[in-house]
Image (cartoon, rainbow, N blue to C red; front, side, top):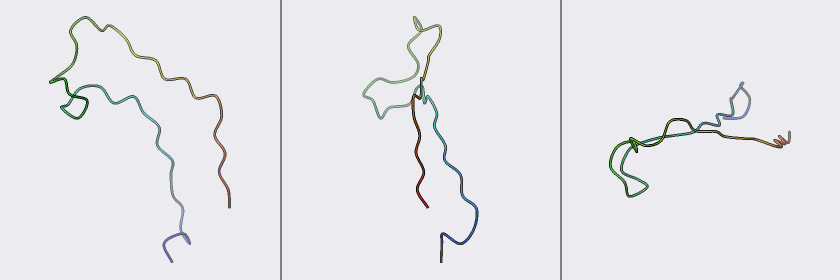
Length: 43
């Protein structure tokens, strides 16, 4: 099955693109923060 091998959890701050309705990256933005308080993984 697909879960009988190692897998990874990816959390990232994606900046840019067209999915959010704005083309490209906001030139006024100098930094981005992503704070993850809690992650729980069940087996």
